[in-house]
Length: 261
Image 1: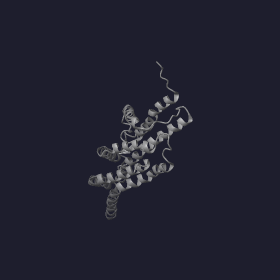
Image 2: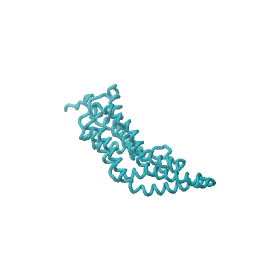
Image 3: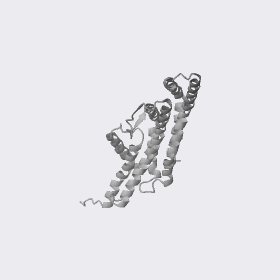
Image 4: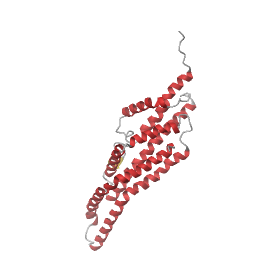
């Protein structure tokens, strides 16, 4: 019986068929919202990555034969990791719009000192930012946003095949420009409360002129806080349409990034 002979090229192609998609999917799960949070154990992300790779590899075209220890292999590793990080970071920016909006509102209401450690990112944010982040995350999961983002990541293998050109420089510039979009979108969420609280502060200015003996800071802080919380409560009725509009715009940017029609 003739022994089975496996060449080095066949072995490298078999290994690369699983290694190259694993790098992109692993980087994507590391940066994407919810799954990439620090509260999710690394073991869960590893299981999801392996499950996605084993389900996706049979429908992918054959991987290029590239040595893992060569310069071309190192360049391919960097390219796959950058593609995964870019796709996950884009959605991370979209959800951080609501964190920044909470920071704006908290500073205007005088709750900037009420900060706590965010377990998902490990940084200190205000309580209102935590509230908006939890609300937007629940809406993201309930509207199947995680499935849409996962589908876009799978489609990226069709538009950015393994060993191809990868994401262009103009696409990376789009990700950089999302920083200004994040600040403007957060201001759009906080602008109604800004305007209402400005009217409250103007009324306190009139009261201080009419009764100079009144301590505006002592009286104004609790009233501003109560008015701010009441305005937040009434603004929640318009939060879902605003969330859907911003999420559609963010997913539209992600679709343009992977060139999905």
